[in-house]
Length: 117
Image (cartoon, rainbow, N blue to C red):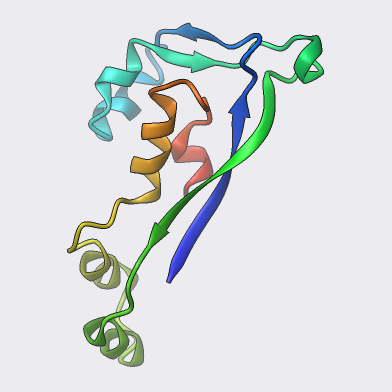
């Protein structure tokens, strides 16, 4: 099973770095990403990106192997919380972790909570 999202890539010509606002900081604390809060990439806009601050897109994805346990849970119509618990029991990274990893080098500034719900 694959879950994927397209993320906007920041324009390399005009992106800059900023600190998180006081409204944004609690979100970073909740997601254990305070290291990002002090140095966040930000879209600005220039002629190269048609003043959008973005140029192109990239994919982030979760890949889950459908195990017998998960198949049984699906057949029993288990609740989503229980399915998620089993799906992330291994070494699978959640979409939000992938998105935050792409924010660190400044590839995107999309708020993961807004895109990945």
